Image 1: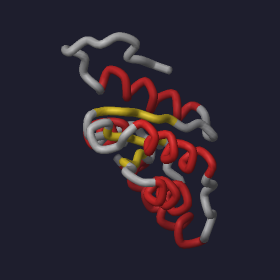
Image 2: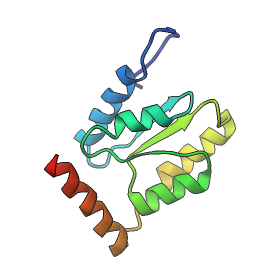
Image 3: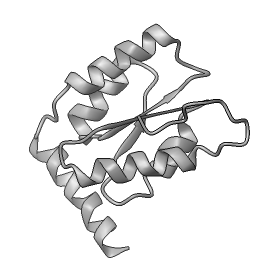
Image 4: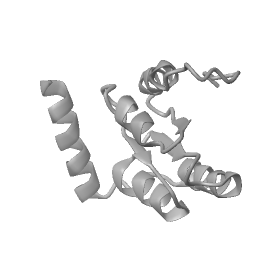
Length: 119
C-alpha cells in the first residue's frame, strides 16, 4: 500500500501511481492496483513507466481479457464508476487470471516492448 493514507484534497494521483508503477516493473511477477475517480488518468500516468501495462476495468470480463490477452500488470479502477463489491470482484479476477501465452498475444506484446525500447 503506497498511499494515500489520509484525505488531502491537494494530492495529485501521480504522486501515488508512479511509485506503484515503478515497484511493479522491478518485480517481473508483480502487479499493481491504482484507484482514482475515473481510473483513466491513473492508467495514463502508470503507462508512462516502461514495462507497465495498465488497464482501466469496469467489469470482471474486462479484467479477465486484459490479463488473458495483454498480460496487464496494473489494474486501474474508477471509484466513480465501480462500487466496492464490484471492485472486489474485478480485483479477484485480475489477480487470478493468467496470461494466455497465445502466440498472437505474445507477438503483440513484443511489438509494444520494441516501441518502448526505441523511445
